[in-house]
Amino acid sequence: MLQFIKNWTLPLAMLAGVIGYFCFAMFDFLHPLKPFVKFLVVWLTPLLIFAQLLLTFCKIEVKDLSPRRWTCILLLIQLISCLAVAGVLLCIPFSSVWRISLEGAMVCLICPTATAAAVITNKLGGSAASLTTYTLASNLLAAIVVPLVFPLVEPSDIPFGESFMRILGKVFPLLLFPFFIAVLLRRYAPPVHQFLVGLKDMAFYLWGISLTIVMGQTTQSVIEGNTSIAEECIIAALALVICCLQFWGGKSIGGKYHDRISGGQALGQKNTVLAIWMAATYLNPLTTIAPGSYVVWQNTINSWQLWKKRKSEERITKHKPSTLNT
Image (cartoon, rainbow, N blue to C red; front, side):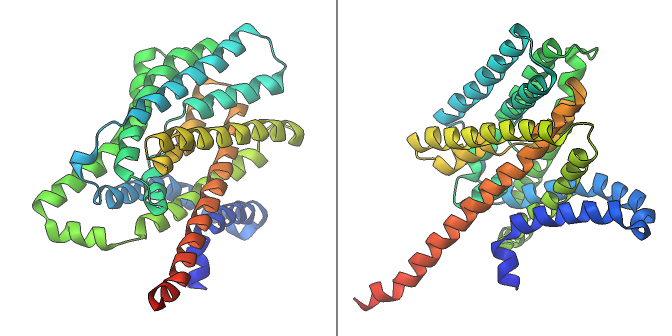
C-alpha cells in the first residue's frame, strides 16, 4: 500500500483535492470546519513551499547557480510568445469565450516557473541548480512584463511600480529565504544541514500535500465559476495545448545543451497559484480557468514522466543480476 502511494503520489494528491472539495460542498456536517480549513490553507501553503525549497536548496552548491545558454533562450520564448498573443488580442476583436481563452493562454505563457519545480526536477534526475537559476530569472521577467502588458489587454488602474512590487512580494520571499537559510546551515550548522539532505524524498511528498490544496482550490473555481461547461472545455483545451508545447519546447531546447529534464520543467511547470492571482487581478476573472486547468495538465505530464523513470529504473535493476552472472 505504501509503495502504491509512493509510486502514484501526484495523481492521488490531485484526486484527494477534488474529493476534498466535494466533501465540503456536499456534506453539511463539515460546514462548521470551513473557516478553519480556509485559515489553515492560507498559512499552510507558503509553509509547505518554504519547506520544499529548503530541503531542495540544501542539496545545491552555490557555485552551480549560474545561467545556462538555454536559460536565455527559454526566457525569450516566454517573452515573445506572451507579446505575440497580446498583439493578437489588441488587433483582432474576438468573441467572449475565445478572448478569455487567449487571455488564459497569455497568462500560462508568461507565468514564471513554479517555486517547487526544483523538487520534481530533482526527482526526475535533472539539475535542480540550473532550474533554480531559471526560476529566479523567470519570476523577475514576469514581474516586469505583466504590469506593462496585461493592462493594455484589459485596462487596469494599478500603477506599474505597485504591480511590480506586489508580484515580487508574492514570489521572491519564498524563493530567497529558503536559499539563504540553506547556505547558512551548510556553513554554520553542518549536522542540521546533513540531516535535511538525508530526508531523501520528503520535499516530493510535501509537494504532494501542496498539490492536494491547489487542486481543491482549482476544483472550486471551476465548479463555482459563471461559465458554461462548453466554454470551460475550450479554455482548458487551449491551456492543454500550451502546456504540451511548453514541455516539448523546453525539453527540445534543454536537450541541445544536455539539460533536457531541467529545460522541460523550466518552461512547462508553472507557478499556477501566482498565475491565478495575476489573471484575477489584471484580466477577466474567468481567465483563471486556464491556469486552474493547467494544474491538472502539468501534473499529469509530471506523473507520466515519473512513471517512465520508475519503469526505466526497474528494468535496469531487473537486468543487473543477469549482467553480473555473465
